[in-house]
Length: 429
Ligand code: AMP
Ligand code: GLY
Picture 1 (cartoon, rainbow, N blue to C red):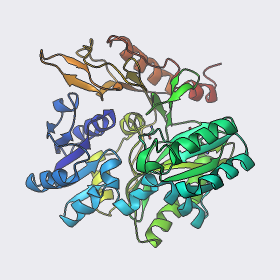
Picture 2: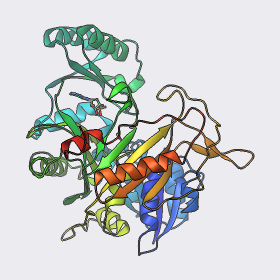
Picture 3: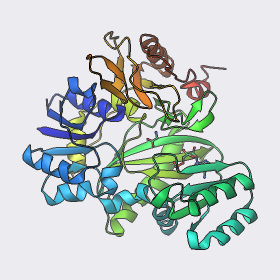
Picture 4: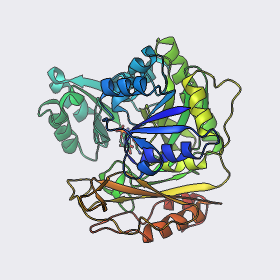
């Protein structure tokens, strides 16, 4: 089987790594991939959001299955175009990807189908005065979100009404998020702890992979600005059996039924960002793809063949199939460049990539090969060090031992990844 993986981050490196261990021995192409992926797949110089070129590539190379990593090409209709071309694709159509591409759509959808989520109102720029009234009447804390894709930066959690009004002005008047801010969702603040759930769907049925927990803030103890994610672990103890059962019944199943009923059956991975407060659950967001860095811990835990899983989902054949998740845990730490999540300096040589350790994988994201053949930094999140172990403590120890081998000037990472999980397990104060 020939598989094309679309994307070039650490998530896609983890996907390619999982595929490369399959007993089905697929031939793997990646577009555009990255220097880490290059050792496992053939790289194709096509951008991840160039839908036309990706379809042409898949047809010309007679690809059997396309696995799409990031959201942008899905929202632009890559899956629709591949389906028309007769190529199996793991990833939702543009209509189904609206669950991520339009928060206004997602919120209205949840309301239509009785799926638990924070109370909200949606506003457009001609309704700016109403948005201001609504925020004043509601009070803080309150959350202001650009409806469209904003690279994980479109949600502002506001501790004061003034902050909230500034965010509303920035989105609706100053157009700080461009078109993504045409619609602004204003919603109530949810208390609790978040977990990420991953349902692999074939349009009708689904199977649940391991839960995970991300660390969105740049600073330890969840301080400082939001990032794309600074580390993760799986499974997330906060997502207890009771929580998972409630999420299946009250979120995942009604979501899949609702999408089918609305003529947009969901195929691919449905990522549910869930706020958990005791046994109370609410959807914070849907994403139409794997999380990054969650994929770097969820996929290493998958004990079943990933090629079979993705191919079955892409071709509507999940009936009677139940993948196995390994018993242990996985944890990962993101190594970011100086300045991240703001502008970063690039071109810094990375030391230590040659050394390997059992149970540890180093996934590339913002890396490049310079004129002298050295691997250097080329983005905000540079590497993800992921490790598995018999439990969370062992996985974390191994991940941090892996981190200790690596260095580049200005490297930053969080030293408290997994601490909340260890506390829930009674393994940390
Ligand atoms: P989103 O862009 O919707 O994924 O939101 C980004 C992050 O903002 C989430 O992962 C939460 O940490 C936080 N957030 C979003 N909505 C809420 C909410 N209603 N209550 C509390 N925190 C939220
Ligand atoms: N880790 C958060 C995301 O992928 O959106």
